[in-house]
Every structure is written in C-alpha cells, then in structure tokens.
Image 1: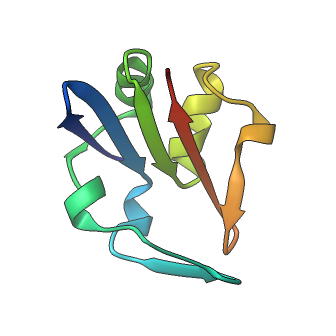
Image 2: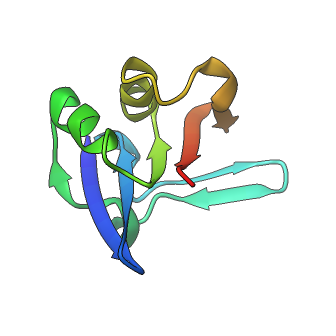
Image 3: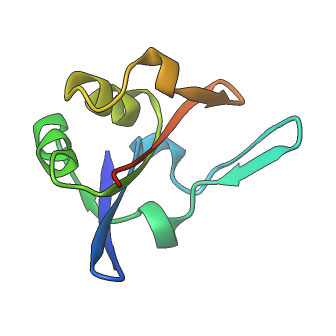
Amino acid sequence: MYLKIHEVDGKKVVAVCDRALLGRSFEDGEISVEITERFYKGEIASRSEVISVLQDAENVNLFGDMAVGCAIESGLIDEEGIIRIAGIPHAQIFVI
C-alpha cells in the first residue's frame, strides 16, 4: 500500500491506497475519482505500519481492499462506513 501523511493546519491527514490503484480513475454514476500520485503516493507501507499510523490520525482517506481493511482491523470503521465507487472500497474518517 502507499501511505502518505499530509500536515494541514497542524493536523495529520493520512492517505492510503492499494498500490494497484495509484494513477487510476473511477466513475460511478455522477461520482468521478482519481487516485493521484500527488495525494496518495508516499512510502510503501505494510499492513502493520498503516494500522499504526491510523491510530493517531485526525483525518483519513482510504481506497482499496487492503487500505480499507486496515481501518476495519484497527476498529476505526465497520462495513457500514464503507462506500464503493465502481466496486472499489473507499472510506473517509474524520476525528473531531
């Protein structure tokens, strides 16, 4: 998976996507999404590394089976918190 941490106004925004999705675009009805290198391409990370980083994140954006699976495994979301865009699992988590 690719893991990239952005700092925005002093808050950590974590972007994680499955490696095979980087650079691809998906459309589903009126929704159009591009998994850009600018936002998602950071370090290649293992499942345990991603789960560790998710524990301290204020905002998280996840695309793909493995990436979303990490959030489920860590208890941050459940199946109801996932949407699918062109069949690809996606989740956003915001900690207030």
